Image (cartoon, rainbow over all chains, first blue to last red; front, top):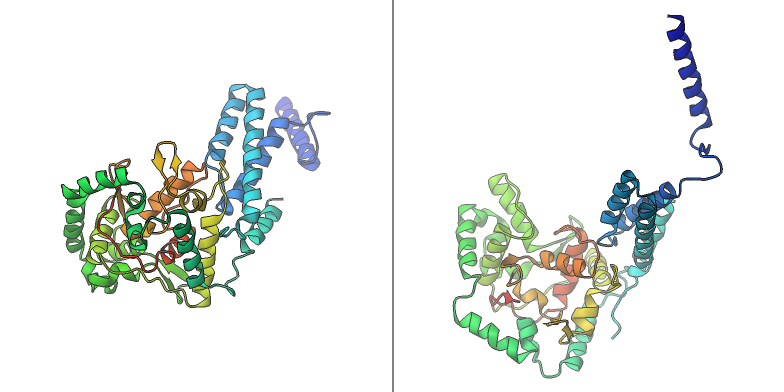
Length: 106
Length: 273
């Protein structure tokens, strides 16, 4: 019983500390997760491109593919695909930024 | 960050959509003038025949198909039966079929949106049957073809009058000319600036007259499809993500696209490669 109580208290103490530190704390000291950064950027910009009705055809598939690769442990390939997807989304947003002023050249 | 991006993009989309300087007739004249300059041999009325107005070999094939039994004929007959079966004639929009097709697309000021023939068919179908109708192929194309056929020979006359209509027209125009997708292309890149030229083995059809023969039967599809299905196919070819058929963007573009064909006749010859 004593053991159980001590374990419960220890878990509670650790989780409270984790909550207090929040997401700003980098648990992976010295190296952030490059895949997480790339995929988050890709997903954020892709969502914005979708909202502007200017998304590219394959970006969504690439984001899914990146997640799949990451899950399978191929982190290098996952990062490359995530970066390519982000690049597509950024280019789509660049197109969106000038789309409103598009008109004929004659 | 996402909010900032959305705001920047929205701002970008708003630029140029001001309707103050909208002059549809001037736009149309410039549009037709462009085609006169790049395809001087094509008569204005012949643009209803799309690519067949441009290429003689394709035209011969087209005429042979029309001389026989066009592959869409049965579907259009079925469309008539379906129109009756589902009681679509009870809807006000379809009381007079001789003009129904010519009334679309139009801008509904009360609703603040462009209304298309297919959108109206869907709405009427739901009112009559309580069911939903698919937007790109199947029933909707058969019924729409049947309705369109009743107005064959009638001239397109899209009216863009109110401020709301002008704004929708400008949005549609921007969509038509905006570069999109991985190939950074616009609808106009193929169907305006390079109409009549080849893209691989296919001749690019002129945008002038595109909306005179919709829904179209495409050999590639092996069946009928709506204009919005074709928009989706073009966007995919540009490697852009297609939008939903009957989305406001497509409806606005149809409004502009059809207005550019004002003065051309609706045709029942809806076969395309």
